[in-house]
Image: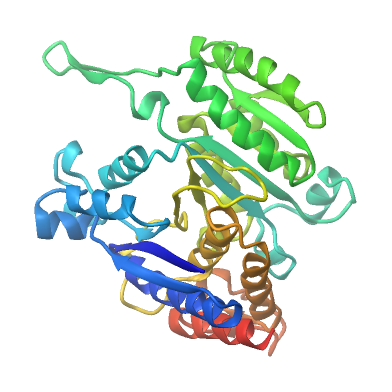
Amino acid sequence: MNYSIALVPGDGIGPEVIAPATEVLDAVGDLYGHVFHYVELEAGGKAIDSWGEPLPRATLDAAKQCDALLLGAVGGPKWETLPGHLRPERALLGLRAGLGVFANLRPAALLPQLKDACPIKDEVLRASNPQGKPHFDLLIVRELTGGIYFGERGRENEGKSAFDTETYSWEEIERVLRIGYRAAGLRRKRLCVVDKANVLESSRLWREVASVVAQEYPEIETSYLYVDNCAMQLIRAPGQFDVILTSNLFGDILSDEASVLTGSIGMLPSASLSDFVPGHKGPMGMYEPIHGSAPDIAGKDLANPLGTILSVGMMLRYSFNLEQEAAAVEAAVQAVLDSGLRTKDILNRNALPGTEKLVGTKAMGEAVYTALLKA
């Protein structure tokens, strides 16, 4: 099969983590008989320098012609003084809206090789895990193109007061709920809707829609939590969660909180989808690690490429319906971690001598590539 992939390396460490990810994709192609065609595009700070805007129309138009989009990162101090509509981060909002990807899937699992990097004690992890293991494996599904980030905003009283509006429609909530339920059906069949229904009218609508959609998925256990309680429960007992489904703002915050529990934000992938039907090739999806551009380490061969490589695995699974290939990529990452290779962000300073080895971005990518070919 032939697939076209829009590449947006972006800013900071973005180009450094995209390079090994495409090498892994090429290895998948060689092993399984696929051909991946890459279309490199500019967005974010690099596009501002070249085009004077964070998301040129040519970038969006070209991305729409591809089967999926893989993004590195955007942003950096060079562009921090620009007005809001010209900031690099506006490219992310524009790509999500322009591609119609409205559901963001962010897995957060504590890998056994990185257990010592988790800030939560073993006994706390064991207490919340059904099997009594110091482990958790959850998925946060975040609505991506509605809510306060896309609502009406402005200044009043000569700029001395400001407002941002949270707005959701029944249809926006319903469609992301369906993706959440389908994802839960492939996991442990539990979905928790997170909101602030005791205060916000928009959250009360979320509960109304969820109560209707839940009836279509009787095999899925549905529960509800207020967002402040959920934030506490993620620290107190993360093993209780399977799928968390929530709004744009709440999902942004909770997914970053969950990422810290895994030991490093550099390990975590994400997928932004416009639909998901298990067992079928999906429409355009946007894939990216969640770590950001990290300008302080850019160009130093220090960035962890595993979040981007695992994002490639999600691409193979959700956009291309290539489950065997996705599992092979994930197994290669596990094999490399089993071998003791670590980038700086996941290095355990207290590890026994000889059990871990510090490597850079390129060496880590090459190790995954090699492990994939040997499998």
